[in-house]
Amino acid sequence: MKSIEFTSNEGGAILLVDQRLLPHEKKILIIKSNSELIAAIQSLAVRGAPALGVAGALGVGLIALRSEQNGWSQQQISQALVDLRSARPTAVNLAWGVDQVSPLISSGSKLVLEAAMAISQADGLANRAMSKLGAAYLLEKCGQKRLRILTHCNTGALATSQWGTALGVITELHQQGYIKEVFADETRPLLQGSRLTAWELSELGIEYRILPDGAAASALFAGLIDAVVIGADRIARNGDTANKIGSLGLAIAAQAANIPFLVIAPESTIDRSIADGSKIEIEFRADSEVTHFAGLPVAPVGAKSYNPAFDVTLSKFITAIITEKQLYHVSEGVEL
Ligand code: MRU
Image 1 (cartoon, helix red, strand yellow):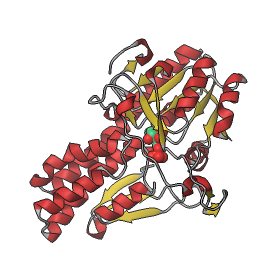
Image 2 (cartoon, rainbow, N blue to C red; image 1 turned 135 degrees about the horizontal axis):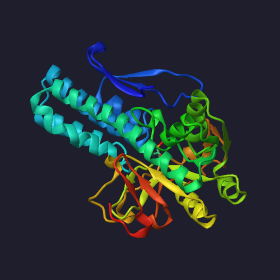
Image 3 (cartoon, rainbow, N blue to C red; image 1 turned 135 degrees about the vertical axis):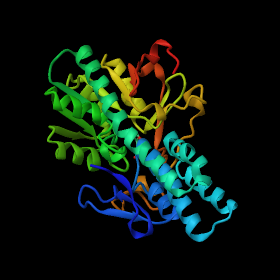
């Protein structure tokens, strides 16, 4: 499944699986302008760090195309790039995707789009490589048996260009016959776990259960879980990892329960300009995501929220970070 691609039809457009409507409806969104793309990113129609990287790169292609078609000034192009690059702050992949291809704008939209599509293709290949590494590591660490894996948020084909990162490891293990059951955290407040991960798991034919985020620690201590695998939005040089809110608590609980906690992410998610996680900007989202459920109020009128979309898991709680290139033992002080 491809969650995001470009079509030359419709005068040139980005096609996205609208992740806001899943699992009930699979609809393709046709994105024709930079402002439509930014709105899709901010409302999580497209989300997940690697998918945001591809969205950023394809978005630059769209900017280049529209500037050619409408004779934009240099200032209009620069503003469009700044707006796109900063649509969401935490996942480094969005800015990375924009930066990778924007130097090509002066060479024409065709070249920008080709480079963006190459990024998408490379992401798919990277996911397959990190999944094989992750699966081999888990079988070595936990023993050659059918594993019970807990995961958080959504890291599958929807969150990437293809295949997935943490969910890619689970898929790889499943294909090798080594998955017993997946525990998918529902992932409050926007339910990427129950809406998206559970949907992908059912499409893949993998046995799963959804649990409230608050049940994860007790599942770990009840002996129900062999390993925890998550993705990442930005990884600092020392291995501190920003990921969906709830990841930090999960990592601390996994360490206390002596259960391996793995971060699976592409090299493009490592931000080597940042020494540690304290420098990672965390996105805060609207009160209504917490005070309302499916559009209905579930809290007193005017209730405020504390709603960070991400947290930073310190490297000391991470057993290993696995990319398409290698495995990093960051808790032992390995620098990325
Ligand atoms: O707010 P979201 O849904 O974009 O958050 C996504 C996550 O936190 C994912 O776990 C992360 O981007 C890794 S996706 C392979």
